[in-house]
Length: 576
Image 1 (cartoon, rainbow, N blue to C red):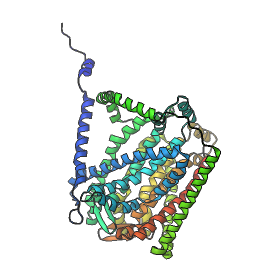
Image 2 (tube, helix red, strand yellow):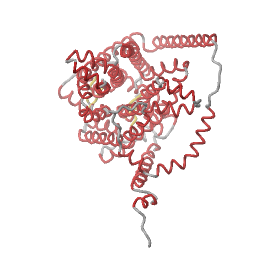
Image 3 (cartoon, helix red, strand yellow):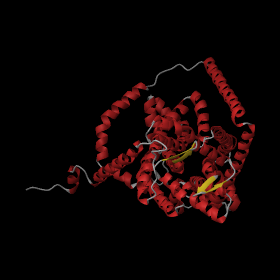
Image 4 (cartoon, rainbow, N blue to C red):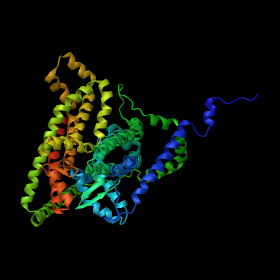
């Protein structure tokens, strides 16, 4: 008698199930979309005759959104590669660390528009007659807005590896490659994914600046959401701006569901410590990928090749005994590094004196310094207001799990949403209410920067152990006493992290916040951001260099003499 297989047996015999069909369909759609959108990067570009035009028909918004999103992901790929290489070298070599980390501190202080003004002409010359040069300049600008935070995160993770795991790796004589893939990257994965997500969200802010480029007295436009918003501003078309905002909301939600949530759910397996109360991240797409058979099939097919490559790299990086350098050799290297450092500082100082004497003059330097003080006052005011308003709200949300579950995704969304997409509406409000941009620019800068204070306040409050909170309640601590004894020590480190991120974001945002337009109307505030924006627009290289250098000096100085001391205070006094 013939029998039919059970449904489970039949499912195993079928070449693909529903999950596999969904993955195949999704992959085909993704490849087709990338091919269609990517082809636009190879269009002809010969300014001023042959240049891209922005069509304000809302039906073009999906295409423009895909163009912008593709640039963001290409920049993220390069940022990840740079992070793994640069962070690894800086963490593994004491001598490289002394050069690379201060250099990284300086690079992250340079405003994104500064990188754009320096590189755009070179990239266009690298690909003559093709739009690919302008695309490369845009991607590089977005790359510089993402990469520094990711690199610092990876470097710090490598420097703070649990000692018992390092000793275990040494005991098992793991090669350099095995340490990297089995210990160092997995240990850093959770923090790296989180910082990549925050950096990616921050990158949206600079999409507009990187797609509607106004540098060196030239106007360049790339098809994308940012250039669409810029064109709508020039046309004073509020309905088109509304469509662009709606599209941006949809893009952020889709990227979160289709990329970041699956990545966060996957990276959770690398968490070194699992607390009983910790909620496991969930993702319907990650569940779909783990259910399907096609990814496992592809993995099994590629496993032999991957194993051979892994064995080769493990052999090439196998442990070798090297005699440690003698104390005398160490002293010689120390002297050499010190001499090179002073030589570099002396050369840089001589160049600055020559630059000032032959181009801008001392008066212009003092003007830029004074403008930097005004922008510093705006940034400081923003941080004070954001701290006073959002820190108590963040603590209240962090202490209430139900409220946190409801509102934390909203805060993440607000932090990822590009605040400069809201600038046109704020500018129109300033014009009609006759509000000076001297004060209004603080609001514009805060639209993006304030969420870092709120988000880190929530995270800090959630990190306070429940037993300490219950003890404070039993002791009757309330009001200022509760803040003084429990909340401030518990959230201080997280607040400092949020403060330094918000400060850096505000300095960068000052360039687009101190000069805003609505159609033919331009509002301007007095500050270093407006100084850099105006010099960049007309192609005044000496003033561009002076403005970028002055802003870098302010940011590095504040980080060194203010934020670093707060970090030390958090480590020594305000910790649980």
